[in-house]
Image 1: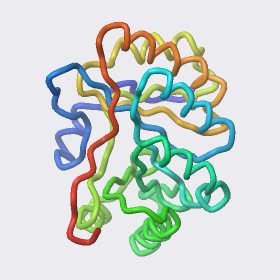
Image 2: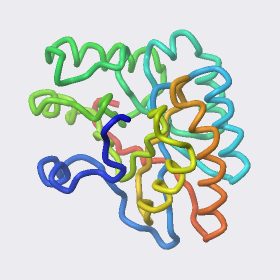
Image 3: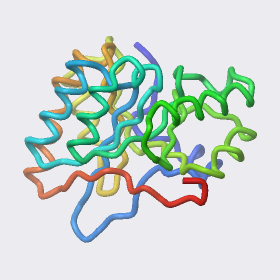
Length: 215
């Protein structure tokens, strides 16, 4: 089983206070759903169907190469009124990538998206301090409060659901994946999670887009 924390680590929040981990609660209890690694045929379309059932908005952090392959799916995301964010072109691990290469990869994704976005999520949540300084000039770096773990094939889907519900609170930024790897678990967890919180009066919104001079 992969090792990961379902709730983001307090020490990381302290080291990187400039990142978005959680969004302050609004008048009504609100959850900020995010989906990484798409767009992918069938998988992303399933997500869109589930979101529509609950009048939910979400943010999709897209891999540029998947946008290149499946632009028609990206259009469906945008037409449904959801936000998109940058997740690099090749899903690069910032810790293992030279700064110039990393920044160029982000820009390549931005160009492929073809729409303005000031939201960026580093793949694996891994990014160097030197990269952070450059990225923050044009983007907000969006991390998460709750990591569902839908990508972990050894984590039973019902456990994934239970832990996601347990750690979610008003204002949580939650990470799912619209990827082939996460598909078996995500398709079980997402509709049940949406139903659970909708029944308790929660709304589901996309991460707000700040305005930067460059966009």
